[in-house]
Length: 324
Image 1 (tube, one colour):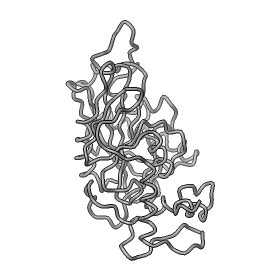
Image 2 (spheres, one colour):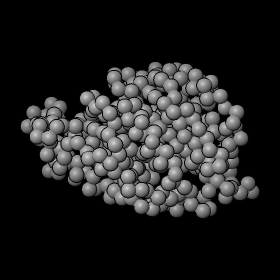
Image 3 (cartoon, one colour):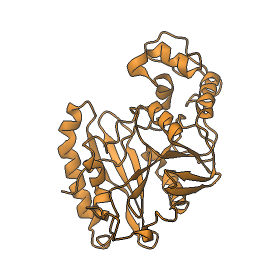
Image 4 (cartoon, helix red, strand yellow):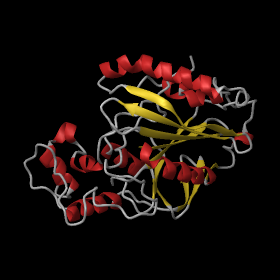
């Protein structure tokens, strides 16, 4: 068994609005929480509050974004670990900003993300946004000898079975069942750059919109840099194109690169390329570490429900509006 067939990142990301027919271009202006201009968007459920206007939702998004220190250009992630030369079409936020976004998307605190990338011109909490979570796993130098020998069709079948077998435990823990539909993008490994990418199409119980989990792995001296994009399948064309750009602007810094490996002092990982795709690294940390949890139906609900589990709808909406 190669391990967990679930997605590689334990994050929740809202799906695109149901009425959306085409994914928004990365540079497109953010809609006012999915509401048309001049119309009211739904307020927090059960709060009995007056419905917020499109202008109020847009203002809430702007206040949220202002606290993320979004930027482009050259940024270093980790302890001088890697560098991203972020073009103007993207925006980067560091660990604190990433934590804010992931919590707004419904994740518990403590993500330990090194940062996140977003398409420019769209708020991370807008209906048509998507994001890339950046993290690092240091479990040794991953040897790539198995890359040419992997039968990815056979590997997919194994992952689908494991995902199905683990559903009873997911449901027992309060998570929805998930079905791994198939590859949205078959795995590709570039031995020259030591970069691996693939994408999975997922179906979560209770959610009519299928989920896209697009993954990049950059092999380094002592571990693997992970970049995981989460969106709805409707955004596949956009995400696929933009993730190919991401592949080109992320690199380990000198001293941490794959070729810097020293067999005399550096540890070798206990797994190879196949295990990275199958999710064995995520599985080592526990069943739900690698589970991409249920996508909520709309980011309007994210805006209205940042802390629904602990704060109550009125308090949440006050916080989003900047009143608390």
